[in-house]
Structure formats: C-alpha cells, structure tokens
Image 1 (cartoon, rainbow, N blue to C red):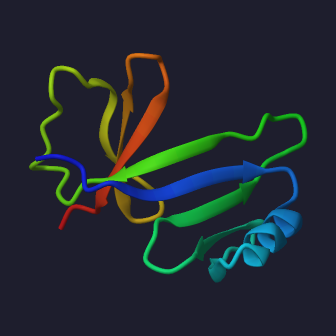
Image 2: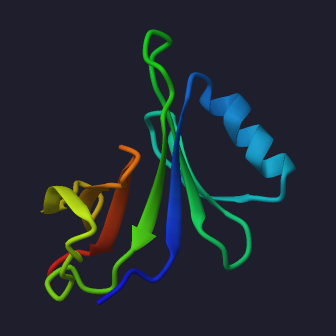
Length: 114
C-alpha cells in the first residue's frame, strides 16, 4: 500500500494571531481553533494547514504529513527508513515517522484503529 499524497502541513509559529491572519488573507478558512493558540485551516479540497504557537526560545518547525488510508495494511518499502512505527496520537489518528535519504523527517498519518 502506498500513501495517498499530502494530507496536511503542520506549522509552528511564534505568533498564532499573526499567522492566522496571514493564512486567512491567502484564502484559508479557519475550521477550528483550540484554547491553546493553535488551529486548523483549509482552502478548498487541498491539504489542511494546522498551526501551533511555540515559545520564542524554540525554532518554529514545518512538518509535511502524507496520508495513509490504513496503518495496519501499510508496509514500508525497504527504501523508506522507519524512525518510529505507527503510534496513536492525542488528536485521534495514528502517526509514523520516516526519514528520506537526505535526513528529512516525514510523517505518515492514518485514521485511528477501529
């Protein structure tokens, strides 16, 4: 089983309000906001963007998330280095981390186990 393309982009920011306004100015709609300076945006049928505020002393990171329809059926090709196997998340999905040949980390996200 292969991935089904990009599902989401996770962005960290030092200013949730400014980041939210930036994406709204680019045509993204806020789908939901949390009570801890984070939220999810969507523009049409494309991948969603999730933004979370981090402290000033932490460098903001970007993470691209690839969609996997079924974590139990997914088998990583030998060309894909698995860093962490699928694990349940606090937001109701399962997440695997893989490393590409240049050392970048990628996330594979699947629905929660039934």
